[in-house]
Image 1 (cartoon, rainbow, N blue to C red):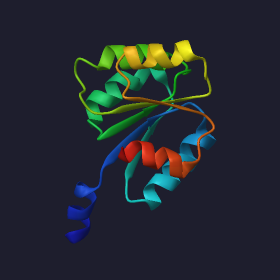
Image 2: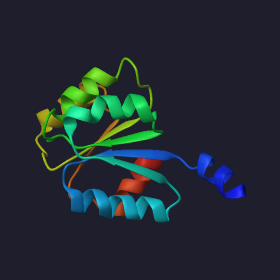
Image 3: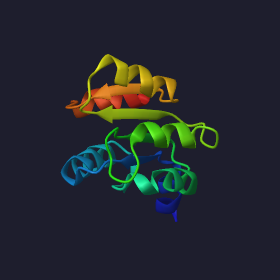
Image 4: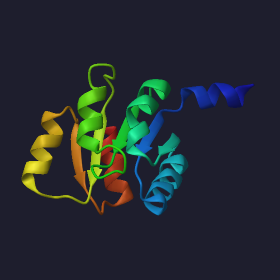
Length: 123
């Protein structure tokens, strides 16, 4: 019974990322640091997964199949007040500005060291 209480108290992170290797490596690192992690690879399901899971934080890739991260962020913001961290290989200043204007709380360029990602999440 204590295990179920512990799992309820861990923060849930939803990673929306189509790079399976990166998503799994990030999941493993976050799980070893006490988080529960769900992964969604298809942007077309991003908004519904955020609404369905109500995660404590969303790590959202910018370039996704089905629907891009900017669109997901813009569409989900009226219904989801939690933090959204954009994690993307696109480093153009305008991409960062757009991401923040669409409702992202932070913008982290790939590749990112896991410790840096964790620090950004906690901040």
